[in-house]
Image 1 (cartoon, rainbow, N blue to C red):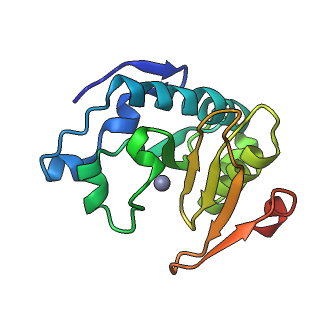
Image 2: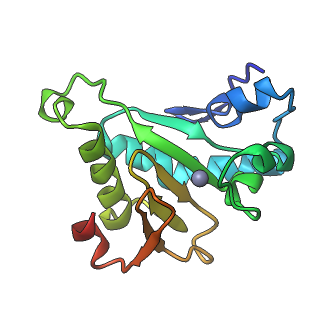
Image 3: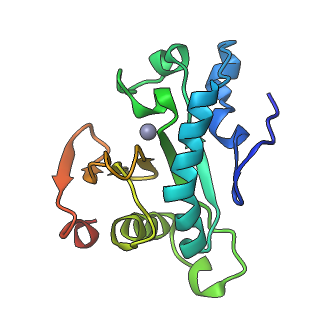
Length: 170
Ligand SMILES: [Zn+2]
């Protein structure tokens, strides 16, 4: 599927719907119009302002998942926000013209993104989970966002962080 629909200046629909796993298993991962609206909201309020402030490309590793696709992904939550297009997993690419940040390690780039999501007033979110090599972030609506912050240790254990303390704890 080649969907060039532009969600926001830096994000195209296909970045959230193309999945190697879906392709491998012959799963049709096309989104409904409602899912596309949710993905657009996630980009508008979370990912696009993050991309702007970060100045580095954000690489989506998993966006929308149909129920069928979600079920075959190891460790995917059964009521995952990926099912409705409200969540995305990403890492931060190091490819940039800005030499000030091009030398940062992959983890440092990820932590920088994590802190920006929490601290920047132009970036909103519902749930934010930092894993060793990627971030899971979701957006629902301004009224319903819970601002939950979690650190995943990579061995199956998680720890909830307060919004005030989180930036210093990763
Ligand atoms: Zn996720």
